[in-house]
Image (tube, rainbow, N blue to C red; front, side, top):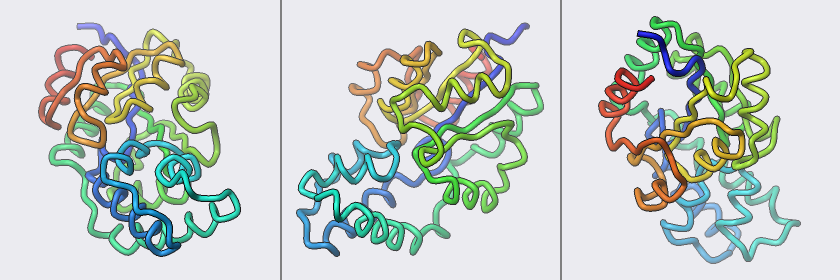
Length: 218
């Protein structure tokens, strides 16, 4: 059976890696370090997927621009302290390997920095499977469509043959802005109701469900 999509683009945090809780804790700890109000879990989770500066700006609205660099440094300190303990969602490596063997082009579009993504790809061993990657510090932050446009141009894939998979509305709105299909996963950062409001093709609730959906619909 012919594939519906040629290129499958994944978000990283909260989609492939079980890291949303660690990001929330790091944002909250960085806020406390600098003496700013600690954002509640819901607000901190909402900014996952954005570039770091955009995320901190929205999570801690009291933060003056002059303190962005200090806040980013404290965030990285707290996140990296537990970075080595983070794991992929169960079945992720098998899913990526299977898609690769079936001939899909695979890519990552993430709010992580290039240094952070390269570290994660090396630590997990998944780097060999991806044909292209884009990070927020080398392109526009989600939901701007630039990362997807750049990946499609690089890999020679039309918008109708591209699928974006992510756990936040930022991912799904980026897909919409780029004119590509979006698929939501609910086991990451954003709640189901918000994901569905962004108009994905579907919303799957487990990593196993993601693999099943792709086998039936990819």
